[in-house]
Length: 290
Image 1 (spheres, helix red, strand yellow):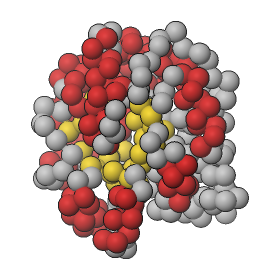
Image 2 (cartoon, rainbow, N blue to C red):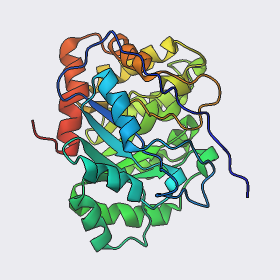
Image 3 (cartoon, rainbow, N blue to C red):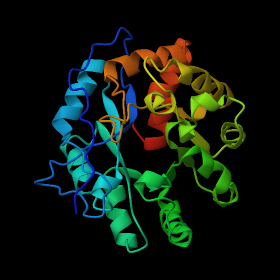
């Protein structure tokens, strides 16, 4: 079966004007392959260009990022080997978020936990296969709660509405990827964003102010700024920032990660909040110690 391919990321990372502080963290990025060593899943809807740890590190060094959360992406499915290999290469630099199902044993989760994984992620996005089996998902969540892990949900705006009651019943930290992928053309008063804001008033909900390039129609992606600012105003202690490098499945405008770094201070002008979001919040959630 022919696989859908992805636009390659911009490898010529710009040096941003914004200078990130010590221990700044990219809380959402990926390692892909190399597929000769870590094959892509035959069930994956896309096979991206390889982005091994060395290329990710080069980008992070350019934009001034010294910590990162490696998020398992659907192209590797539930084989977390590429992510684990990158973490083992530099466990002080990297933490991880895995993908899993209820075939994973308690021993499997214990191994992941001991090797830097601190959360489990589920995709609800249609082009990545749609919502998971909710009963399976609930069984997995109950297995990882004793480890102190959190749940990461990759949802489209409509999913926040559709699964509102399901998400509300879990006593676990829930992290929403990419501002819920709410399209900026619908405005900050759209129902999905209002529901996300309502959830962010709960102490167990976090959100990543990432992927301006996915919710805003074109560069420089400034349409995303009011959304990030509103979320930061609600819960500054539960906000993360990430690049989403190497930006799988971008349709039209591939961002440069240096530009995304410079977008961050427009979203968060206050220096104290900048440090909270780039350093303190991810350190608290993922267990980094200064």
